[in-house]
Image 1 (cartoon, one colour):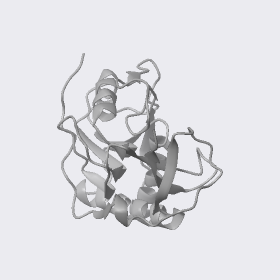
Image 2 (image 1 turned 90 degrees about the vertical axis):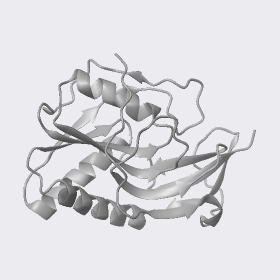
Image 3 (image 1 turned 30 degrees about the vertical axis):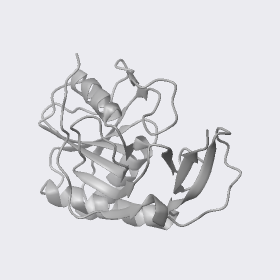
Image 4 (image 1 turned 90 degrees about the horizontal axis):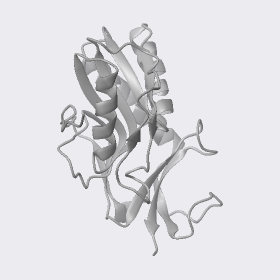
Length: 216
């Protein structure tokens, strides 16, 4: 059953950047489709780390601590981000935070794709209980909102949380659905031809956020 939802609300002042202002970066040996060209680096490893620390503090402050708090990462890169945030929040509050995984098989909205509708794997357990809890849904890039909308459908198939908020590392705009993140690492203005690539050490061989562009 599909549902249209607005996840959380806009967070505080977020660091923004125009795509044209991003630091140029020479081409690397990272494997990618031949019709994509690197334009520059948006965030370095240290910038990602500092941003996650800030987001962890914002999550704790907005939720008045960690009571009944659960983080759920959207596969793939939302999972390591949720795990990192969980560890940071535990360091801040000296209390463990439950962290789960939402398994989504899809053509990503933030990559060049063949299809536009995410396919949700609803039979895979989250690994945590979400009923009656404050859930922070974590993903790497917020784009059209279709991935988050599909993830919300899957989340509610596992139970009814008390509250759901969205946390993303990058918000690149171009929303097609009324979905906004409560916690945003950085807002980047992009064109439809540009793509945000989040590369994390747990998934990739490097740690940075890159801006790439379709060349054909």
